[in-house]
Image (cartoon, rainbow, N blue to C red):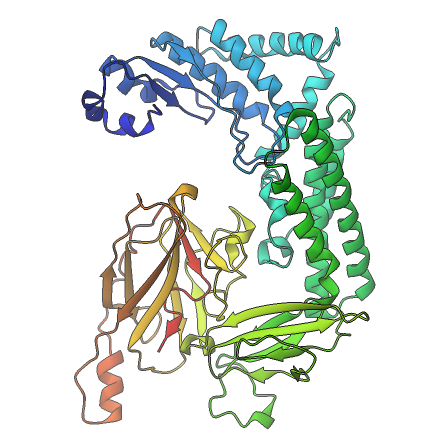
Length: 553
């Protein structure tokens, strides 16, 4: 039985069979694991220790992590009476190739049979150096040096480098091509290419073909990033169309070659089961690239108090209604669209200029190539009061942890684009890590608000938790805040599966004053007070693009 639950609640062990064998697992490279082993040793139950190759979501294990993790956990397990050691080699994403794991697995066997005896770093260093010489001789049939083994360390070092650590995760390549967020745009691809090039020159693709595949996977992620930045330049600054076409063709070739190499290596070590999963990832991403010139980009222009009305033909009663614009990458395709959710055809409305969004709508748009083949884009847009306001995030969303968690950038919570009902990696959900969410909306003038609604995701399998509590404050000046209302929600972390949480909070209304001026004063006159502490954070709170104080009516 995996022992992490009973380790936090040792009294539970007395309720379980005496011959239960607990597996005490820890995957971080710690100097000592005595504090984690203590509950099992004191209860007297038999237990094993389980280190890991840290291969769950990475393209290749990192020796700088697993060598220390395995050695120190084996040592502390042995000294505290563990009956055995089991190494874990997870592959959560279904893509990590097993042949990259032999170095760590052999080291696990070495430490299980003959663990290090002290916490002296010199003993660990000597044992590691001797093991690598033996591995070079027995695995690679090279009797001098550790040249081929050292290649594992050079690639592994990319995981701990903050400039390349996110590329080390295999999902980096599979995130939607058109999820172009501020984190991607701020990256220096030339610097990344130079870092990877220095590592790549040392890899022997014949001796280490699986490591070489992992390295090419990292390069493809950079190639994808270059294409995304070119797409953004063309959409926002009118960049050269030929640049996008050239980068798209280059990235498509990278995917084609990577897929061919992956299937070759997969078939050497595995059967057909789940082979198609990663194959489909390649095909789906390649399809995005091939249809890039016919994809319809839907842009929501949020018009706050600084916006100058430029399109007077609509005679808008509310100048803060957002404008919706549609375009293809090169701007050379006719776009036909519908707003009622019906299927678009060449007989639908032809897009000619931006139009205001005065109600919630599903925009479905289609473009055609010279053969009459259409590519459809669909986007639901939720119309709400905050779309004309100014949003300030006092908490940074987790795009540094994973780029897809930006949800689209600083205005994602109020731009009307909802996250998927089935996935939090579609680029439209905004995630927060280890901190409370603090979102502030400036309406520019008093607004009468009756209800605040928001959506969250909970998927405890992936450590995604919905918040337990929401507090709503009001302010006249953005400095002094008064608690208006708060609500606590039932969030059971033991619920499994992908769950959508719809939160709705009714706003208490003041007594009806006699005049409009009195109404404004009674609702927004706030006595000075200290800014309240924010609510405790969930471990990982994902936020939809129309979340806290965003859907208002």
